[in-house]
Length: 198
Image 1 (cartoon, helix red, strand yellow):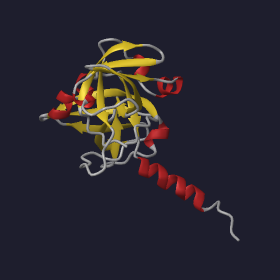
Image 2 (cartoon, one colour):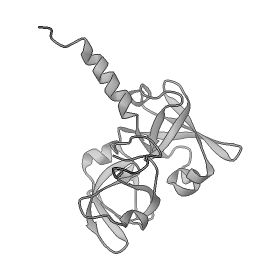
Image 3 (cartoon, one colour):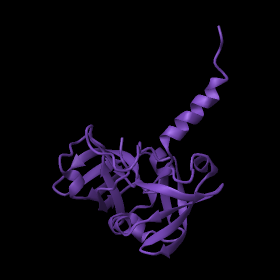
């Protein structure tokens, strides 16, 4: 489980179809082989540790559902260690199970912040509501507006400066994870009418 509060950005030093090696600092503190780290919001298992790098293995499913197939040496990625029991949860409950990718449609300055619009598949948009949560590249964000195919978020300067979102351009792919509670509620409501009665 994650919170969607990015701890730092890391730099990809190696990327193959099966493994990504990332240079980082903060997320390496206390990390052991087998621990989970969210990379652009995708929960991945640390399989190798060096002084200032860690490696994660990626599967074809991960590459299909995320933007991690686009990374190359020099790419910058968002990083977050798994939440620890007893910590504050500053964002929302994020599983690190990226459902799909969307893309940046527009970025417009609004005071000190930037309003960013993303398109998203309908399968994601069904769970997106104004003032609800969504994780974009692992960043916990509050939805401002939405329609059937896109949503907007207002991004503060701190987030722009400390995550990959500040460098995302129109057309760039982003990883999306909708609110898991909304998905469970929908599933429960679907199943309510199908239970056998005795």
